Amino acid sequence: MKKLLLLFLSGFLSLVFANIGKISVSKGDVTVIRNNTNLQASNNFILEKSDQIKTGVDGKAQLIFTDNTLITIGAKSLLNV
Image 1 (cartoon, one colour):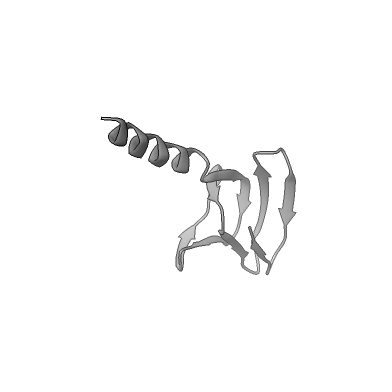
Image 2: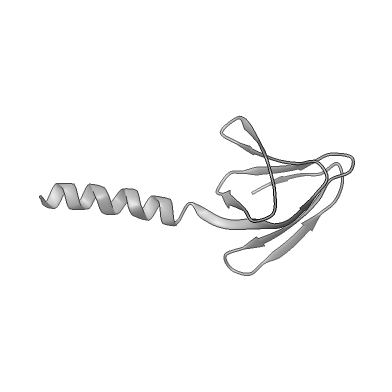
C-alpha cells in the first residue's frame, strides 16, 4: 500500500511542477515545440519545462511564468524555456 501511495504522489507532483507558466497573449503565428511536436499556441496555453516558443512573421506572444516574470517576444523569434 505504501508503494502505491508513493507512486501516486510522485506522479502527481511531477504533473503539478511541470507547469512553469503560460502564454497570456498570443497573436498571429505562435507555435510551441514540445518533445519534437509542434503545438498551435493560444491565449492561456500552459508552458512546460524545455518548451520552445516560435513566432512567425506576424506572430507575437506574452509569457507569464509562475514566479511572475513577464516576457514578450516579437515576430520571427525562437525562445527556449
